[in-house]
Length: 96
Image 1 (tube, helix red, strand yellow):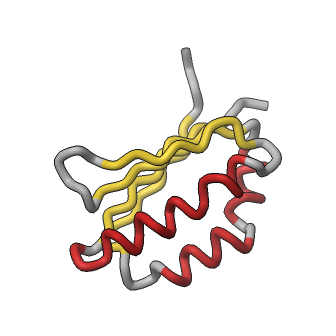
Image 2 (cartoon, one colour):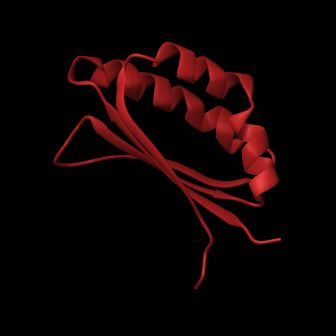
């Protein structure tokens, strides 16, 4: 089965940047310990400090989907529900 790359773009509302950053950082260690997680790196835009990007690499879509169903991710979504201005997620397949 093909490995899965996830690109998640999160733009916090101007008054919620610190909250979103803190909550995103909480996801890193616990997610990196999950089955199938190969890479889980958080980035911040140098020009727009409200824009964050997760670059993720998973052994399979099924294992990534298990991550999406985990409590820590659901907790993040609940805490940041009104703090995020924009969220996009791309599921990608590595070619070369």
